[in-house]
Image (cartoon, rainbow, N blue to C red; front, side, top):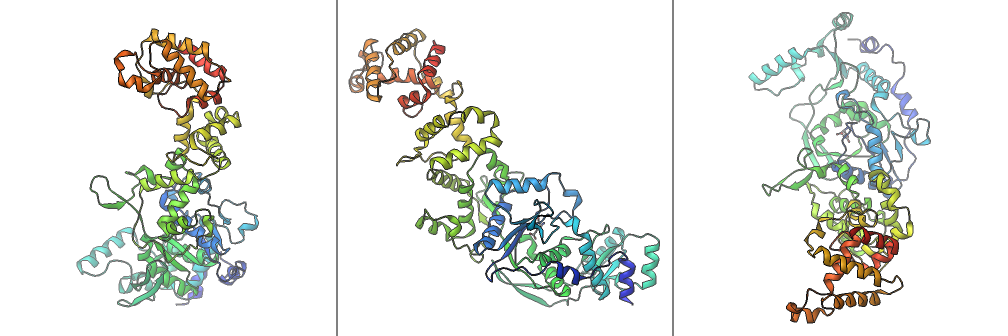
Length: 550
Ligand code: GLU
């Protein structure tokens, strides 16, 4: 067979050679230790915790030594494509404070786009150039088998108890003559381009996985599809060409790809490419509430798999990073405890230390980390985070809550002890904080106020008395003394001890007075220091709320 002639028959329009691209995309000028990593998602519109987990690994591996982390969009499967997915990926990772150095999403002529295009459907010419070259070398051929014929073959192989697939003696179209191929093309028969595998049955390949160590797998013998009927490459072919030409040095990808590694091993060899390092990651697992056993996080069953879940509730990206790093590198937690003030990017992240078996996602642990880390942030960090979060996730609240910066800061100080020595550690996410402080901005009572029972007429008397006696200038102690006076004047005990000793002598105690005021002012039975609340809110607002109650 004249392979050169066949190559020209199949790819008449391809006028470039691999050399052209080798030159166009030279090896990157980086320091020896610097790695080039990538995130290579399909634009399906769903981005999950597992994606973030490996993206953080990629980002750390690249940025630890001034390497490059880029975004490539693997859109070879038209059916799974969703409009706006690229934006979504970039915005989502940005929320979690992970930025790409180059790739999809940057303007086409940007300096960061030298190895582009980064969207696979825009690279068809490149794939065809390499495909043509393989045909020229007798390493790829067109296969005209129909679905029915392939199904027949599968049945035959099952009957013979042979390995199923298109390979060796079963790969009929390996032997088509030039004339037969030409005739099929003239008749408009669809075809795929297959690799002419050089693998040997029974042989093994050995390679090093950065996480799993030495891996032995059977050599690939299958004539796998390189280009589909529409000329679009399969994952395997695109992976080899893209990661070679984009000069990726470490491929971090899901463990489900490990079984195809022999295909990639063969492709890199036949194409004359150097293999990147591989790191096949473990699936994120959780303990199933019903069975108590470990299982994969599932899109259907576990809302916490979706990253939207964390963004909508407003978890701080720093807390998420801390948590994911504890999952990614088992020695991170100890390091972070030892150096709590060191920027986490200084942690010596290592691929080898990544979890070999399924990392266990533990929501409670994540919550604890969130509470703990949030309590360490500065006043400005928390304020800025809440503000940015509100812009997207609570736009209706943003203008109201942030109209007065000083007021918001005082509230945060009151609730989170921000700027003070002892910090509250029960707040984990923005939505929770907003709900907790909402009464400063709206006048809805919550259900905690329902349990408080006081006769309406009695309440009126007490609240009116309170309004008469109230003085904004009184300090916390003087203010509370005033509540005691009200208690004494209405038959309540101003002395809690005395009340406890003889409750029958009183209608209640000063606590009941404070509670009546608290509920009238805040709509809730539980709040931090009421005097402080009133002084943040201001006298007018306080009076207005109580008057409404009356
Ligand atoms: N597009 C592939 C996926 O989403 C990427 C795998 C890889 O990182 O190579 O599974």
